[in-house]
Length: 71
Image (tube, rainbow, N blue to C red; front, side):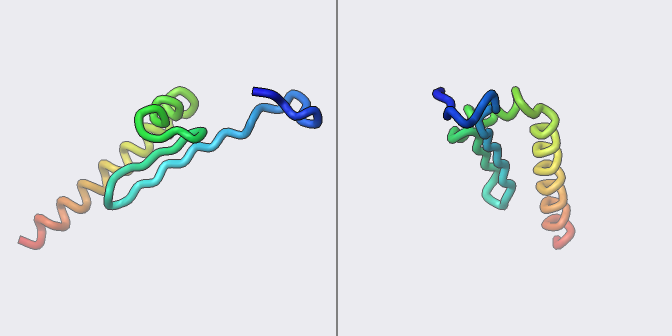
């Protein structure tokens, strides 16, 4: 990747996004999506992957308990 003359030795911008919703977990990292994005995020931010998985698990558990308490 070519660097701009005025950029010096700075690293390029890295974009990481994790969205958790009713339809599931969507990830994006440096223009990649899906498994490639998970791989990039796991390499750079391993704790974030664990937190996202735990958060999604808690949401599913709460939703399940909420639905079963209605019956």
